[in-house]
Length: 112
Length: 114
Image (cartoon, each protein chain N blue to C red):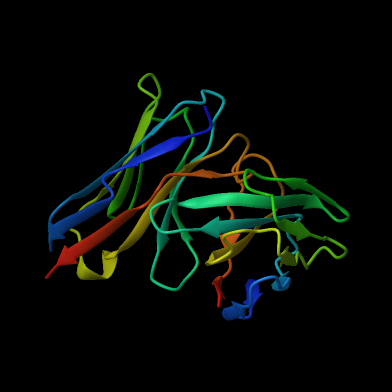
C-alpha cells in the first residue's frame, strides 16, 4: 500500500518533443504528489507538485495530470530541451512532505 | 545562503567501521529526513525527525542511528551492522510535517565501503 510505481525506467525524446512519465499509487490516504528533478551527483529539487483536489497543474513547460479514480498521475514536459536531461522522481505523501514515498525514477535523455 | 549542507561529499569506510554523515540546515525547518538512494530503487526513508530530541524510524532504519540535539543538525551514523552501506545518502528538511510543505534536499554524500 505504500508503493509508488513509476514508468518508464528510461526515456529518450527528441528535442522539441513531449516527455511523459507515469506513476501509480495504492494508498488512497496520500494527498500530496510532488515531482523531483535530479542531476547527476546532486540532490533532487522540487519541480512541481499537486494535490488531489485538482486534475491538472501547469508550470511553464511542466504539467502534472492527476486521475484520482485510477490512482495515477503523470508528468508532461512540453517542448523538451537537452537541459531537461535528468532523472525524474515522482513521490507521494500524506500531509505534505512528511515521509515521502518515491517512485523508482526515470532517466530522461533529450537528444538535440 | 540558506540551504542544506551535507558533508563530506565522498566518504570511504572500511569493513566494520562506523561512520557519521553530517547534515546542517539554516532554513529554520522543524522536520529533517535521511534518505538512501540506490540505482533503480528511488529514495528510501531511513529516519526522520519532526522536532528536536525526537526522531522516528523510516522504512530501512536497521544498521543506522541518528540524533537531533539541535534544530539545525541531524547527523546520521552508519554502523557496522549495516550490511550493504555503499549508497548515495540524501538529507532533506521541510518547514513542518503538514499540508503543502516542500522538502528541500542537500547535495548528498556518496559512501563507499572499501
